[in-house]
Amino acid sequence: MHSRSTGAAPALPPFDYTVFGGTGDLALRKLLPALYLRDKAGQVADGSRIIGVSRSPLAPSDYRAKAEEAIREHVPADERDTALVARFLERLDYVPVDATSDNGWDELAERLNTPPPRSGGAVRIFYLATSPSLFGPVSDQLRAFGLATPESRVVLEKPIGRDLASAQEINDRVGAVFTEQQIYRIDHYLGKETVQNLLALRFGNSLFEPLWNANHIDHVQITVAETVGVEERGGYYDQSGALRDMVQNHLLQLVCLVGMECPISLAQESVRDEKLKVLRSLKAIGADEVGGCTVRGQYRAGAVAGGAVPGYLDEPGIPPGSGTETFVALKLEIDNWRWAGVPFYLRSGKRLPAKMSEIVIQFRPIRHSIFPQGAGELQANRLIVRLQPDESIRLHLMTKEPGPGGMRLRPAALNLSFAQTFGGRFPDAYERLLMDVVRGNSTLFMRRDEVEAAWQWAEPIIDGWMSRHEMPKPYIAGTWGPSQSIALIERDGRTWHDDEIPSAAF
Figure 1 (cartoon, rainbow, N blue to C red):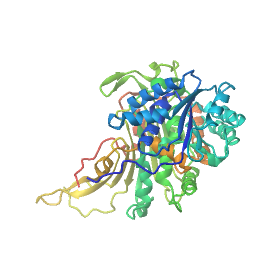
Figure 2 (figure 1 turned 135 degrees about the horizontal axis):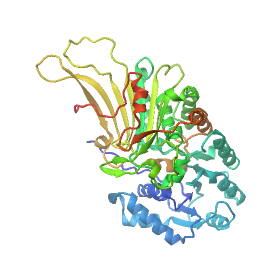
Figure 3 (figure 1 turned 180 degrees about the vertical axis):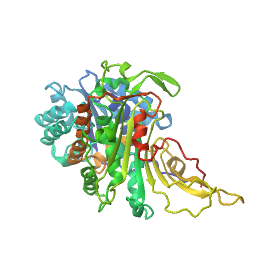
């Protein structure tokens, strides 16, 4: 087994990370643990600060106690070092601030403008882990109190609006305070190691790129499945739904990385330029096409992982008779030279049988078989990029079964398991992206025109659904969505990839 680096890297310049929504679920579950792990890896310079901000009237010591509890809950035990946790907690501060009034802003300004001893200046970052409705008001207050300097950076969590108009309004309002180069619209899927490996797989190997087109690829499947329901997010989720929550951002970004042309370099604008071209090439799905190209579903009571779970309408915060979808499947096309005629099948949902995210590249079958009858069914090659869990890249091939019994063929897999090949712990996506903001590298963040192009494609689908006045199709929790999603792909003579092909160890 090969060894893998521990993630240690030269320390970056000192920074002040001000996290609005600092007591919220995202900050405690993801952001603070990620920053601790980067501190442990040696990437947080002395003099750096993480300042939690929210309306809650907490003392800094109380906030550190919350952070310590979050690290204990969300960081693996073998990564928790008592001395390093104590050092990290010393970097934390807290200021109660009301984003919609002037309360607390003077104190935040005083805190930021009174830095601790450190060599040189610090990168000033504002992370808005809040409702999108607060992105504009927070930006306005940052300008009003002189906190938004030309060197500042602001990070926006998804979603960026709920439609094209609201996305443009947010972009306009934040853009009136920060330049586009200062704005980092985060999509944590782009920070996953296997997602970034799509670039290495395609453009770092001579094997795949000549085949990466309509001449050799039959279709592409992208699945992002969750076993959980809406949990404590019922109020938010019911105003969003699966298409807004997952497809318009996460899944379309994966489509971009699969479908884009080779950039001239890995420079941030080169990569984002190519992704934008894919979004602008997506074939429109209007009101007349939504019935044939999309499926909406909503889970009913069932069983997941051996335990009974309630239906969506019985979840806390969900209004009676809600028509919000918890599952969506789509067939889309990239209308350009490389991909003409190759369908991309997307699906994402809650309360499905397994938590997993993967991309399946299904190649075309061989044109002619030279093998005798009885040799076994020839299955077309398939490349599977598993994003989570068990990150891996698997290439399914046809091989001869060992033995003297003549030519018998069977499918087998070349399996690159990241855990077995590289060992060690893989940094969480937020670890990478939080440090990319400090570096000033926006390659893995969405540009304004990307966000708006994605909404331009997604919004007609939502409008088409609303014009049909149809409720989402029901599906039992613990299944792969409504039967109509199976029909969506099978009427094209294809099948969703749900089960592993038996594989041999190569």
